[in-house]
Amino acid sequence: MNFYFNKVLDKIMRKILFLLCIYVVVSCSSSNASDFNILGIELGMSPAEIESILKESNYKVVPLKVALRTRYNKQIPNTEHVYFIDARPMDNKVNDAVFIYFAAPPNDNVVSFIIRNNNFYTDAPSQKNLLKALEEKYNKPTYIQKDRDFTWSVSESQAPPCLLWNNPFNDSMSNLNNKGINKLISGECGLTLNIRIDQRNGIVKRVKTRLFDSDALKIQRDFADKFMQDYEEKVQQEKLQKANSATVPKL
Image 1 (cartoon, rainbow, N blue to C red):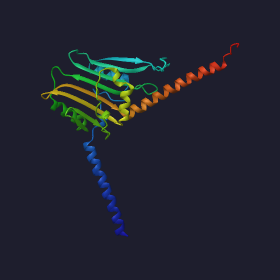
Image 2: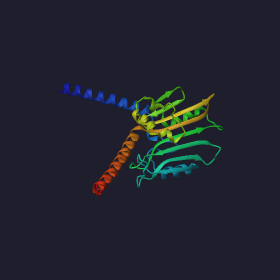
Image 3: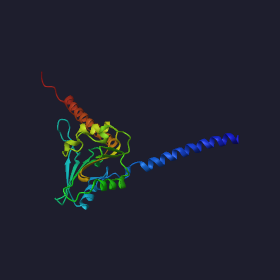
Image 4: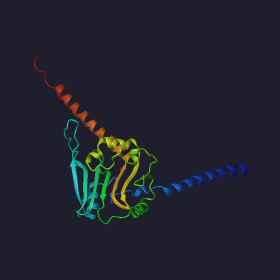
């Protein structure tokens, strides 16, 4: 009996040790996902939090407020929200732009996607020092492509949208159209930070960054789509009820 018990206990301990080893390896090699941010801005923050952070960093903040509209371009009441924030340094000599996108109603009006474009014309860091600083903050990248595209992700997905779009850093707001969002969602990327570093002779010329969570984007998109669908169905039903109560003209 003791022999059998010791044998079972030995198997259990070996299993625990095995799982513990896996946990240690993963913990030491994975990205610091909880620290993913751009200029201190994290996904899920409110417009007020963003403005406070950016103004403290001496950035000019320009928010864009919009209301939801139906497919017939009719404004939906009580849906005005901050859709987008364009942030630039007060110092015009610094070529840096941050584009922050927010979830649409009925979701909470919080950050859902961040893009940053930073061009260095003077005082540029070396690629070596920039990568060292990034690794100190996030650990080593999950994926590296062509020694210029670096990805930190909690997902194992290597679908192209998770690593980079074909044209991932279009400066225009159309970069976040439904087609682009759907590509990211279909990639099942999870929480992801993409950074592209363009350099010449080891000196950084341009850094382009984006931060998103494909799972959250899908939830937010589906919730907003359902809200729109329900609203349009309600309006149509009210029109039908009104028509049913209307007097039929003399025939």
